[in-house]
Length: 472
Image 1 (tube, rainbow, N blue to C red):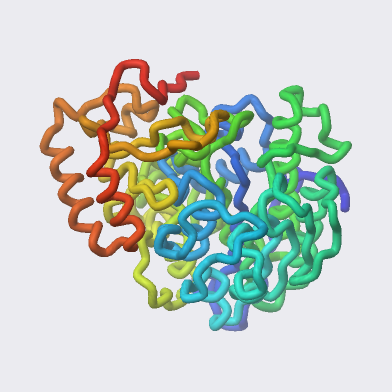
Image 2: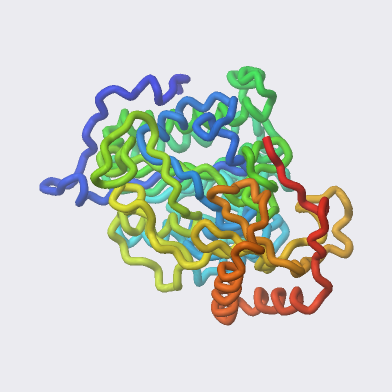
């Protein structure tokens, strides 16, 4: 493959092939969903990083960039369940992280994006990290994907294997070439999929540790191996977008890019508080970009607003739960029968609305319901007694009810540094009442954890107690 980037291929884009007599808005769109692993809110150039990400920056400038997009969960498996089903992981049999020896997986009663699109004639492929179960009934090829190529769980888990469909084709995996191989698979899939609509789900292995980059990128970012890995992933996005243009599919393809949750040790949450595993914003708020030429306008906040130069940055609140219903809206496919926790944010993407109505957004870690968000307000109700991913043994790990629930306006105070509960008791009471109304419809394990949390000693909210804000 030629090492070129998408920014060298942004001249006049070819019109996409479509069924005779159909307009671009009527033709079933292709869908490309790219998901990074452990990428932080502050790790892309368009979000303020010093890491060079020209292809993702350009994608943002040609579409929409969200400021308030939350993952479905602060850990891998549960967030991926939310991405693919539009439902909280706790509803899907995925409350936390799966290990290679686990016998569980994404519940077979759940409908994935791929399963939703198949009846509409879509060809489907998953390339990259799956992490939703390793037994045959849980693998991608039984969850709506025609083809799978990737590492079925995190790259730090053993055994280290690369799979094609259900066959192991390499062990251990050469991680230095995995991003390039994923990219080649994606480009090949796009090239052979021009005759029918397709769904490409591309959950990258990186920048989850252990980190590795190909020789062309190692040492090139000037920001260490982490910067090299992110730069190579940006190159990969450029290759995918370039393949869409080269195949004449660019004008009829919705491309989305996000991360499964916040960063681990090496990535940047920007100015947000917390990291992976936390229900503070640093663990949950992630980049989200969407591009669809002719359908998603760049540089205009909504209908009637004059066009401006640069990316269209929106402050609307959205989450991984919204991806499935949004794809259904663009593809004009029926929604799954299971009640969804997300909403169709298509009107925000296309500039027809500044926001859409969402139900109360809940922040889970495992079965623990810790926070809830309503509009700009986020109420912390429960907190673990140790930091997420603490180096200390987890003996005695448990969640504690906050003596005084903490309220943050996470639009004006994204660092969650100023507790506004004292000035807004009515907001606190309103959110608490909404949580109480939602609890009976949540899984029994969530209700049991909540009831147990309410019955044990409270977290003291002492000054200097974990966690402290991350600023800078």
